[in-house]
Image (cartoon, rainbow, N blue to C red):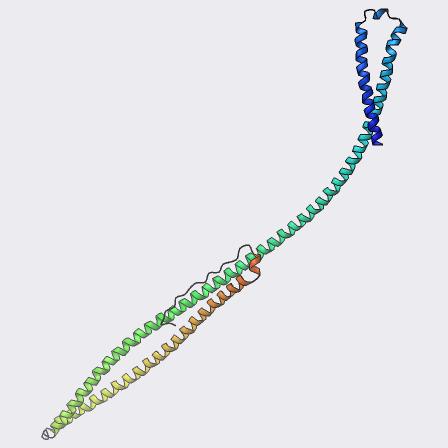
Length: 290
């Protein structure tokens, strides 16, 4: 059908070309004739009939061309409708894929928001734990420092009192030995001073009172030494408490470091955009307090 129409169309074009070529020659012939007004009707018909024939052929050619053009338009419209249908199907598919992609994007956005919220919660939790740990460590540091200061003050006070009592004891012992020597000397003199009994008796009384005073001083010194020995034992117990508190501080720091290590080794860390960072305060302990 298409080939026949194409052949008819080509033939029509040839007819039109022949018509216009002959029409131009005929018009030129008519213009060149000087006696065109003197032509009879028959003569004019002889000249016009071929032109009418050519015009009829041209009309047929135009009709055939119109049919061919309509056929081409019909075919092109069919192709266009088919192409539009195919394109519409592709557009619908792409729109469906686009909607699915938009839904996936929205889902990913929701997941990202959830992960960001989860990350924020983890960061807040770690920050709160860090603040709590730092407060505990600071409080323990202050407590330990107070205990150490109190212990040092008490030790200095006790050591000063012990030094004072030791000096007093040495003085009393020196006095006791001196009195004892005087007593021995007085006993040696008693056998020569029989004619002064009252003087010897008074000297004995003074020596006895001195001995009683020395015994009293000795008992006071012994009680003081016992009291300060108890204080020293109490300070030793406080040292044990300080060591325990130091151990608790180190245990807290180790727990925080273990939690940080577990967090960075867990699968959650790979899903976060930015892994959290935990800084633990380093505490330099006094070697005497350990």
